[in-house]
Length: 116
Length: 118
Image 1 (cartoon, each protein chain N blue to C red):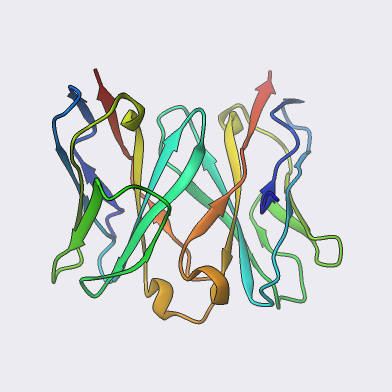
Image 2 (cartoon, chains in turn brown, cyan; image 1 turned 120 degrees about the horizontal axis):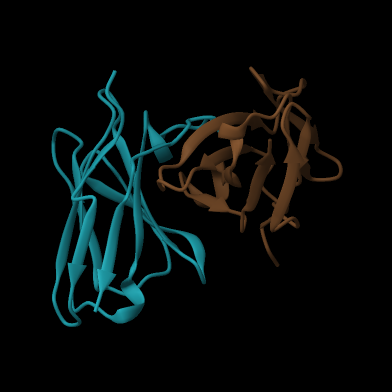
């Protein structure tokens, strides 16, 4: 079974609108972290936001917020007020503290395209 | 603070050759992890080094190896290159890596080395 699933291979969003990128995960480890990274065409992975399995509140970082629904095992990324520079690949990743050390398991990614 | 640096940025090799990639972590970070990214397999974990010791290894053949130096800089080596080794190789550093019991020890990535095997 896939540990991290991103069901949207590609998405379009109008500039200045909000967009939600989906991520579901599967783990039996009670201690885990969920991360979102942005990868522009240059290739570098840019860290956006983190959510810990024990965190009570949803994480926010500027225009990025994470809609964490633990019971449903989902960790969707919400980008508010999209900008042209947000066009990139977005990856959801999980770190299982007890099961997998420091290894990050990545989803297949979502390509976001922002229309002017 | 400087980010993670990787050299070289681009490499072209032929089948059967070997290659060494280098990664310098963020100052103060002791854990270095390596990932391979290909269009077909996506992002896959290669291995993690912490305090000069390999702490975790992904499902890759023995042709892929690495090491870490006392200053936390890391190198990975691929011997007997195959066409399928063409990929973007990403290095990431974090404070403590596997030694940390905190799930939020964030990994910060370098720009990657794009390897092409002909």
